[in-house]
Image (cartoon, rainbow, N blue to C red; front, side, top):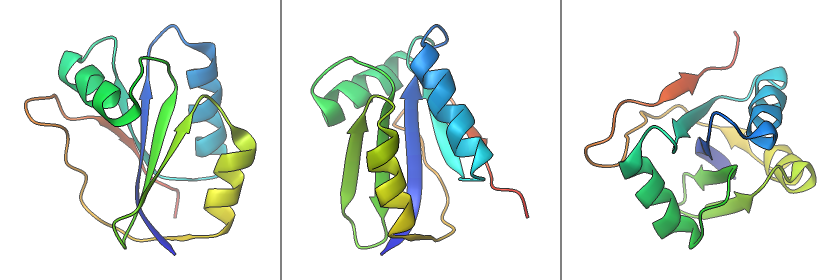
Length: 108
């Protein structure tokens, strides 16, 4: 399977969000971050996707169209997803009307 995009929904005050983002960066995993405490549209989008308001919430989108959803900093589930897939490069598009997200690219 090939990963198209990883999206992390977080807040500024969430320690698990900080841990998740640091963990992804330490593995040179590219991801897009939406701060749902700053971005109401992204927050609404996250609630539609997840059915709840907890953070961190991560989506892993694959090139075949499937999406895996991870609530919290579930390192074991994320490790399994990352180990079983490779990455594709694709443009990232924010939910309608939202500000451009912060994107972290893997190091060459």
